[in-house]
Image: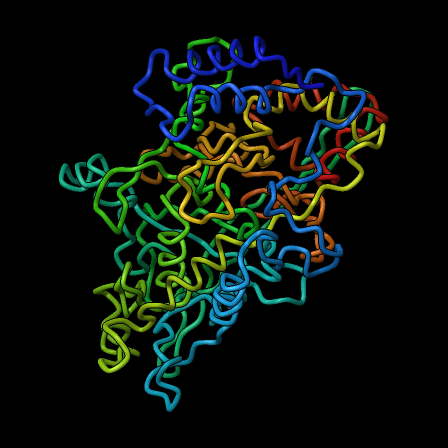
Length: 506
């Protein structure tokens, strides 16, 4: 039970501030009064009593939480506390999120500009039902919800300097750019097909239970534009769930920086790192928050990057009408774009990007289920005891200065620290991205994870969907998460089931 005496609250606030700002240059949270800071410290303090649910624990997204019926549309509801006028903005954004783009030239000039190379014709094609993507094997739905990033190591001092100065995240593969697009407009051909080969690896838990993990290997078959560079590096990515993005954007940087410990100064084996990136809108160096390796600083930047990279549509923020075409693909660069001067300077001119951004910011987190169930509470205690909350931080209070009123000063429960962590050899993609190395991944939020099968029709997890269950996902954890993973493997079957039941309640 959270203790709420003023003395405890003030004391916890002092400890929070000391932990947050000792030994680093983290910014100070300026949106709170001293009284507010004490309140925030009290409500975000770690749980100590696991005999009952914490206050407001079921409302994972604060007042924005959706309490609508749980079904396949559970991730597609808007923030419960937005205004009536904002509902209209959300619905317009939803229509654009689902919009199917077509190749140029077209009679539907407001919808042309697709590609020339692309992975999907609509945002919704990747983020199926606004939920989690999956690998293309064995599932009837499109493989658009998973793709391959590609790049090569820097080979000159100039390229190394570009990455060090955050002018670019990666060095593009000379022919195939930074992402493999398997589809193309008429007259061109796609860049190839992602091929996945799985090898089963048996793991025996301490009680004798045998779990089979599948280790993937990736290749590009039928390359459409010649051989890849011999040093080409692949990184597979499934589309992550869309819920709660605006709330995560509203978490103050100071509260994220509070948990960063890049040198493991406290010797707990956890050394989460901040990743800073260059904001495409301002050119300033800011905190990276979104993407599997924290490569995007905002929902707007992430949205514009996806328009360009996944669909080949230019926006005012990322004005690349030929998408990821390279100089070694001259026919691609010669293809007609969908830019229409009378409509705007880009293929998706304002307010398209703003509307899709607002939609993405306000996809509501569903309410928790069974928060008072004894097995859920027992699993929660084990989750804490195993050290899982060292990375999957349960709670934050969003900024009073958030861009959207509905997302301001909300107690939320995303279970992430939004930091980069070394996850060990098993999950390594060996492809650096900016300041994130080939072993590091951003801690994904866990809210909504228990509804994956309901919404997405599968139970495939991790950045590449290799894990076929939550058990497999946990057992793939290594590096900084090795101790927590080993602790889970050492539990008896009943306790393991309790941890899983807790996760399924999120």
